[in-house]
Amino acid sequence: MLAGDDLAPVALELGGLGTGCAKGLTPFDERRDFALESLDAGIRIRHDSTYDARIQSLAAPNRKKCVKRENGVMLGVAIETRIRELALSFPETYEDHPWGDFPVFKVGSNKVFAWLTVEPKAVQVTLKLTAEEREIAHLLPYVSIARYVGRYGWITATVTDEETLEAALEWLRESYWLKAPANVRDAAFT
Image (cartoon, rainbow, N blue to C red; front, side, top):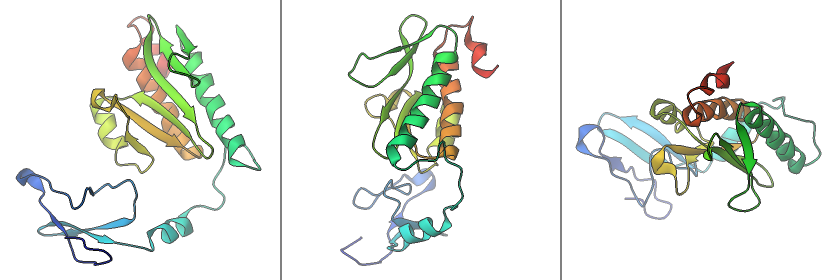
């Protein structure tokens, strides 16, 4: 059990024996402030207060950005523009706003293949993936199960830099391919 600042290990059953979690934590906790250690008996979780500092120090200082910017809003606008341009470049696609002020991209006869929301420091794009691609995507720290539609194979990617943007654009192609009519499907990868 985890109690306060106690660093006592928490054993989780793995393999065919079922899975357990301590106080709602999972091995891929979104907060990312827990380190995982592999043991013969399974996995133990320990609190790691230095995680954020170590990740900050590992970040590439010269990582390419979409635009040189003075604030996060410009980056968000640039990311949104690149996602929108790709989504609308596919045959039979159009932009709609059925649920408010954020764009929803549809193909054919009203089939949604993606939508995006712009936040102050990031852009979130929600799209559908194949089961295999979804398994891989969920291992990435910037991907989560989409709210309300996640059980149907949808994920949400938080795009903040060039690396996450490239992954999101590739997934956008796949989402279009999954939802598009058969006669225009191949345009996603040409």
